[in-house]
Structure formats: structure tokens, C-alpha cells
Image (cartoon, rainbow, N blue to C red; front, side, top):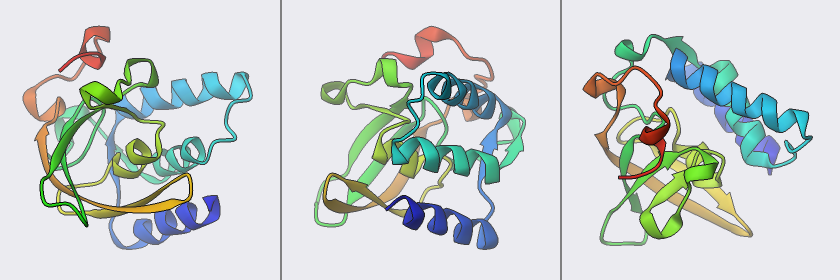
Amino acid sequence: MLADGLIQIINKQKSDEMIISTLDSELLMGCIRALECWHITRFDEVQVLKRKISLALKVKPQDVPRDIVTMNSFVELQRNNAEAPFTIKLVLPEYENIKENRISIFSALGAAIFSEKTGTKVVYRTWKNENHIKITDVIFQPEANGNYYVNKHDYGYF
């Protein structure tokens, strides 16, 4: 399962370079290093995210295109088999709250949509299900709105 995700990321790298902000790169690699100290990196999502970050082009926050999913973005998603789209906010694990549509970057969905752009169709696995979803809009992206700094309160609430 992990190998499939990494192969998809490597193949994507060849055709369409992923872009992330230096701010997100530093923040997320710090989180991943902390997890590695506790030997909590056996989860596929952590490895997929680490690989995505290592392959991505890192740019200044103000240079991230508006249609890229970054940390704290509000993202509209559409399931293949659903009529109505739904909105989530991509957050750090400690701020995840499914009932409030705050999804962890280290979840299967969070890792799948991070650094992707509007219009992208992604596939991610949960338990034994393969899920297909399309990013229909990046409703709010902090970088596109001039927020180039990390504030703890940015991660928690809508």
C-alpha cells in the first residue's frame, strides 16, 4: 500500500512539480522529526507526506500559487459518488476535530490533498477502502491572504 502511494508521488513529480511553502516544509518536517524521535513513523501517511515534502519545490510563502492546498487552507472537496461537495480545514494533528471538519495533515485524506491544486483528483486509502476525491476549490489559503507566519491560533478554529 505504501509503495503504491510513493510510486504515484514519484510519477507525479516527473510530470507536474509539487509546490509547498518553506514555512509549511519547516513546520511539517519538524513535526515528522519529533514523531521519528518517538519511533511513530510506521504510519503510511507520515511516510507519504515526508516523501511529498522532500520532492516538492519549496518557495517563499508569498510565491505559493492560490490554488495549492497548504496548511490551514479551507478546501472544498467532492467525492465521486456524492452530489454535494464538503469543506474541510487542513490542520496539525492536535487541532483535528472531524465534527468541525478540521482534518489532520497526517490523516490519509490530509496527506493526499496537501500540496495538490484545484481540479486534482486524488486517491487515498482508509482501512480497506479506496477513496476517490476531487479538489474543487481552495476557498481560503493563508499565503494567498498575506498570512506568512505561523500563529498557534491559526491552527485551531474556523
